[in-house]
Length: 109
Length: 142
Image 1 (cartoon, helix red, strand yellow):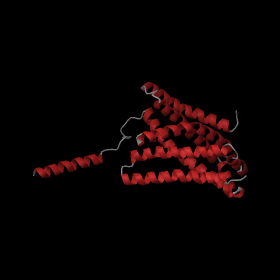
Image 2: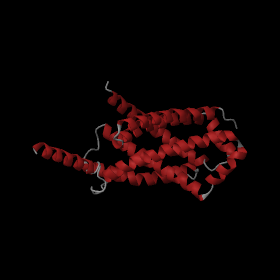
Image 3: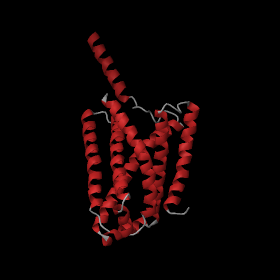
Image 4: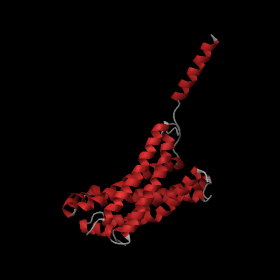
């Protein structure tokens, strides 16, 4: 399979998985964002929200890395700059969810 | 003499190419629902990932404890905090509906110009309806 076809398929599959996760997250975010520390921490520590949030951010950053690289493809003409931007994007898309998941798994109420 | 003329011609062509406006010529084309939604989808997508990054940082800050969380809690309870929450409801709603539109196109439906315009308008109006619904469901108002 061509690498562009693979990228397109990954984008579409991740967007399909993200749609229900986005609905789930935004409703829960509205219900907790203005609550106190223990209420917010409870959301991030209890099941199934801890697992659901972890899956949500993994797919969100995976999808964003694929789609933002398309924006770079359209607007960055210099190949070197584009490669650096894509590498930074991939590092960002791996480290942020990783640190967050480690953080919420160490969180206690 | 001929060489000089060719050189001038090549130079003029290069300069002309350099001065050409880059695609998509936003300042030239008349705005249409399709172009508006395409650009908005990209901008909203970038806003969403910035917001999700901020939410990740917010969840990590919980590790600092109750005392350190108080300023964040105070900020999120201000008008600006509520404005951010409602704005996020809209950016998520718009992205969900427009992404659904893209997935329907990928299945081979909705390419007709009239249908494409209708689904575009539905995505815009629907995003505001969905924003209200998400907020009301989230706040247990139903």
